[in-house]
Amino acid sequence: MAKLVIPLNVFLIAETKKKKRRLVYMTLNEWIDIHGKPQGRMIAAGYKKRIQARIRLYVAQAMVDGLEPIKQHTQLNLTWYLENRRIDLDNWSFTRKFILDAFQETSVRGKVFLPNDNLTYIDSIHDDFTGIDKARPRVEIDWSD
Image (cartoon, rainbow, N blue to C red; front, top):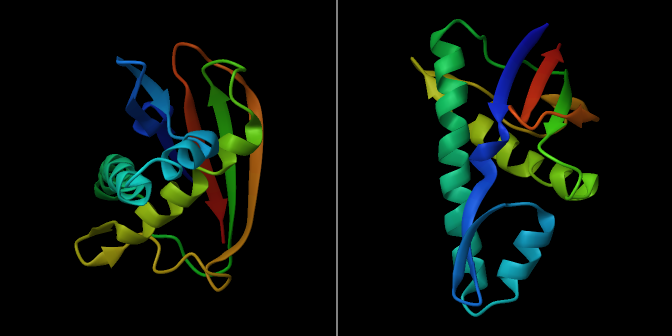
């Protein structure tokens, strides 16, 4: 079984409300809020691109360290360790989109980490929201083919 750990800080974005800047996680609620603003689609696309670039760094390093690309008929298990209980679980599961798209964009030495996230490669995805880890919020992704 292969495993990859991604810290949740890769999903942090800077948000400005009432002239105050703060860091928030890019979850489904934030995505919806951004899309409601003028130029929201372009802003959201920029955030998505930056988040995926951060994820790609972790994936590429893991590949350099010997992690093999994902093969066909893989079952993904995402184990979430959240910073607190403020964000609903369904909003967190939305971030899988960023993770899988980053997997497809990552290649090392000519090997693409995930050629496609369709049903040929990913048979199932299971989320397990294990608990709170204030010191090290993260998602641990493991899989077997």
